[in-house]
Image (cartoon, rainbow, N blue to C red; front, side):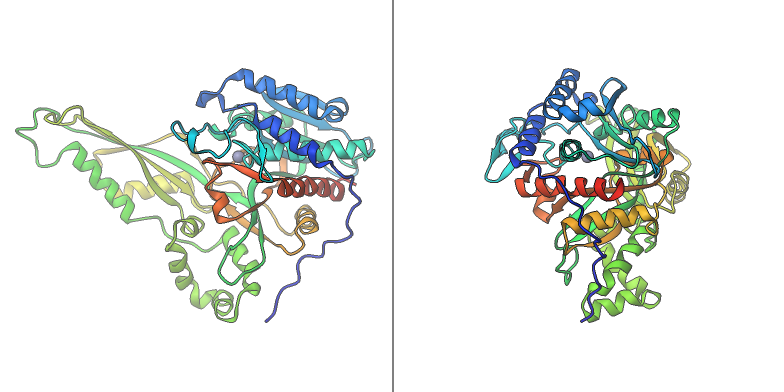
Length: 461
Ligand SMILES: [Zn+2]
C-alpha cells in the first residue's frame, strides 16, 4: 500500500528546555483566575488579575516585549526584531473562557476554576480553550528570551478577551490597532484545528488539521404577525402555524452540498493514506462525487463541512393557552460555507419559505465566510514543519473550521491566516471543550510549548 511521505521536517532547531513544573504552574495559575467573558457575566477584575499572574510567571516577556492594552483587557505584545528580514508573524489566542453551565459544577472531577493538577492533567475551564494557547505562546517566548534568542522578524502576540462572545472588542480592535500601526504580517496563527486522532476509518496516523478558512454566520430572525384574539374562533392558519410551516420547509430544504474549497483540499491530502477501496473513490471524484457527498451528509460533523447548515435555535410566541398569538418569532442560525454569503443565504430563505407575510431579518450576527488562506506559500510550509517536528507521524492537512474564531477579524492584517491549536484531539476530548472536565495532559502541554518554540525558531531565525 502506498503511503505518502510526511512533510520533510527539515533540521530540528535547538530549543531550550522548559521546566515542566513552570509551564504546568503557569497554566494552573491562569485557570484559577475565572476570566469568563464579561458579557456572559464575567468580572472585569478577573482580567486585571490574570494580567498580574502572567506578569509574575513571564517576567522576561514583560521586560523585553512592549505590551499595549486594547479595549482595556485585550493584550497586544510586540517582540521587536533588531534587524527584521521578514514580514512579521502574529500569534493569537484569547484569555476569556465560557462559563460553567449552572448545575453542572458538581459533575466536574476537579473544580473548574481551581487550577488543580491531578492524574497527569491540568484541570479546569480554559485548559484547552484557550489558556493553553496563551500559556503555550508565552512559555515559548519566555524560554527563547532566556536562551538569548533574537528574532529575525517582528513577532506580535495578540490575546483577545471576548472571543467567546464574538471578539468585537478584543480581536477586532486589536486588528484595527495593528492596521493603525501599519503592521502587516506574513501570517497569523490562531486556534481552530488540532491534531485529530481517528479522523477517518482506515487512517491510523493522526491528522493535524490546519484551518485555512472558517465558515460565516447568518443569524436570521423570522417573524409573522397574526390576528390575535380569542382562541374559540380561530382563523384556519395561526401565526404560530404559519411560522412553523416556514421552519419545517427550511429544515427539509437545506442548502446544497458542495465538495470544494478547504474540504476538497483535505480529501486530496488524505486520499493517498486510505485503503484501496476508499482511495479509488476519493481519487475519482468526477465519478463518485455525489456518492461521497451523500456519505458526508449522513453525520452532522461531516455534513457541516460540505454545506451551509441550518439550525433553528429559538422560537417565541404566545402568551396564554386560549389567546391567539399576535406574533410569532423564530431565530435560525446558518453557518455559511465559503462560496455562499449572507446574501445568498437570505435569498435561499425567502425562496424556500415562499411566504411574503413572513419578515426575514439579519440580526447583528451576520458575516460572510473568511477568505481562504494559501497552502503553497513558505508560511504554510513553516507551520507544517513545526507540526511534524513535534508530531513526526502526523499528516498535516488544510481544513475548514466550522465554528467562529477570533481569526476572522485579522484577515486584513496578515497575508494568510491559519487556525491550529497544537493539541491532540480525540472524540472524548471534544465534549470537554465548553463542557465538563476540560483538562489537558501535562505531556500535551509540553508538546504545545515545544510547537510554539519550534514555530518561532523556524519562522523567525
Ligand atoms: Zn477558543
